[in-house]
Image (cartoon, rainbow, N blue to C red; front, side):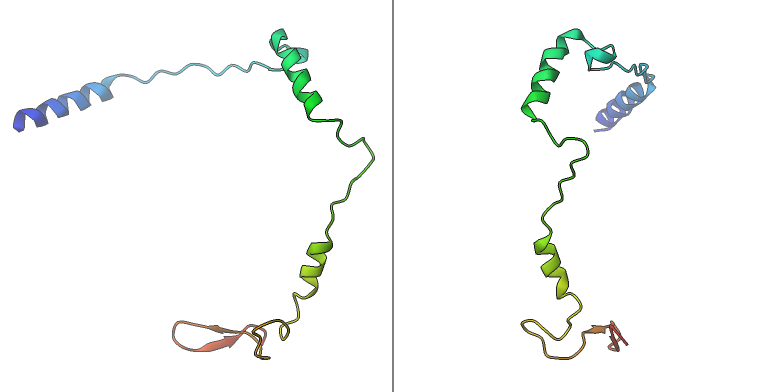
Length: 103
């Protein structure tokens, strides 16, 4: 048992004694227009073509927010909705005291 502990300690000491090495990070562009590998050109072109034409400059497409508007319209109505008792909501603190949310 003692020999096993010694071997583990020697192994850990040897593993931590090896210096860490690293290399310098070098930027390599992907796009051949900016100095990247010319063989990437056809792949990048086919990827761009499969994404579609996109939206032309100056043509803004606005998302449909009708569901959000209807959900937010009832946000301030405290006494409406299912399960409402008609009173303001109350926050209960650990020591038993109650604080109304809108005093």
